[in-house]
Length: 451
Image (cartoon, rainbow, N blue to C red; front, side, top):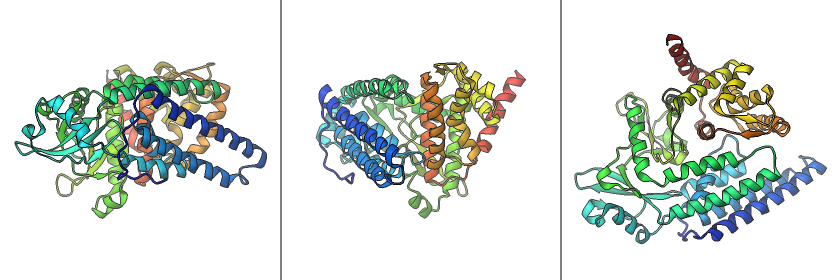
């Protein structure tokens, strides 16, 4: 199956059972096929089952992609995230699921117009001088239109899909059910903490007033940088389901061919991206938590000879870390860099990690999987071979001593790191993460010593 953006829009199924049954049936069927494949590999060996393994993963990726396009909502959002993980996922999944970034069919203007006019309290032609009713982008929860205000500003108008709050609620119920079932069948990874974090964030992702304020805070925080752009919010033309902002005319960050054709140094873009997130997470404790390729644009330098700029869009998922937790993240990162086992354990315990049995080796292995192996690889990303090695080692340790508690904030940080890792691999980043992180770690240590 090839998923293309020109696919005709089909209304997403509404209703708890129409959301529940297709997703559950697909996941259960794929799980059964996967278990059968594991039995075959056990008896016949990996070499003899290599072709069957490839066919299974390609078929599974296509099945999930078809389901995502049909169901939309949180299902397609999750698959878009997985499709951007070129650093860890098998080629079959990356090739198929990455196409979902641009594969959400836009909804008809007739469906969206009542949302716009209802939130703005006036007909579109009264509010805007120009409004292109053909959507320029369609995502999992909303789609975007290009318009011009009466005072001449080119703007992007983000409009929430009608009924999306109910769909998100039903999808969360289904994902919660599947995570609970999985926790009874498989012991290595417990997805329930991930679901809990999704449940905490979902209300904010469908509240555009919250998103607009988050964008303004991030913009103020990064205002001194010349390598980042955050669109201005126009509150007079915004509401809870409509958000109007500056239109950023940029290139998708993973369109490496287009970036190089425009004379943009992808290595500098990768460096800027890592430094930008180091500032947000380690120094300021507030960060854009959904940096998938569709939310990161690259714009030309503001001045001749200056750096290309990264345009951040979609602040629905923005995280503010408590100050104590931010400091613990810095301490944990420093301990992983220095390979201090006891400090890694103490930091992870302080952050809220808990394993079934207290064991320093388990915590250290988690720290290495979280960051250490990538740091010592000398790259800005984990390639597939490295991830496979880490996964085997971590799986063996967690089978013996499973995690029973995972702090939700860490899940978001890990998600961000994973997305950045995938983007770094696509940009062929040359950044050495240790060199990139140490200034921020030393800055924190120096600040503590001075106080």
